[in-house]
Image 1 (cartoon, rainbow, N blue to C red):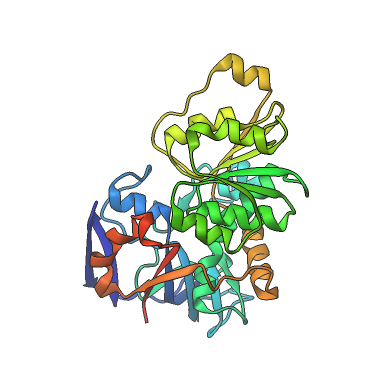
Image 2: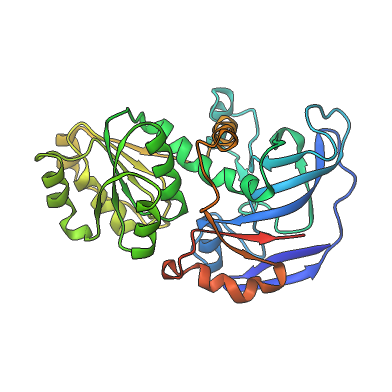
Length: 339
């Protein structure tokens, strides 16, 4: 079967590999139809993704079709179309026991810590499949990206009418904006890419757009009658931006880091204490987040059509992948098509 391997930073290899074996009890063999490309994949391509080794088969945003199930599988059958919960948790550690499997102490993510779905077929624990009879393969491959924003907004406790600042309008920032909007928040965007700003402004009722990060505090105070926002999401994965974000939150506010960086993040202790800030990280998502996203997509509360801007076949990936790193090309969500 055709398999795309990230052999080393900056270099893909497409080769034939053996198909999966017969699924074991509890497993499903699936045909991969679409793979979403996310920031994790882009960072891995650049050699900047933490907890990552090469060679690696990328792919954790998957739209799949079930072709065979092992013994003991229920709720999933041959022919079902599904999205995949790509977080392989142990089920036994304390986070798993208290309902936070996304924080599992032995967590492995498909396409990051173990080989993922950028191949024609893969074995998946059947419990990690969520069936939809209404969503397309493209939509199914978009679910995991959107669930990152759904989880982050849920962790933040955003209230209707609350002003939220979202820093960065890449796919993860967009997913945060989507669910902050559904929560009824007033949204201010900070972004320097004109293309990303235009994409957001055309789809969400933004209160304001801050294009100059150095003047952000003054702009925010002018907009909010001298106040700063109670909730700030940083979705950049940029250390300098994440450090600057501490200045953008109101006293008593919440700062949520959705992006990830390999660099240290520091802050001034007295200022942090004076503001009594709540600082949260938001890691991956839970099954219920993905189920919520699928429901919102099926009811039409989320219009996924504008998100998918680029589609490539495996034979094209080595040539097109570098362009997906450049926000000026207008890429929102790129996908790889395996059929």
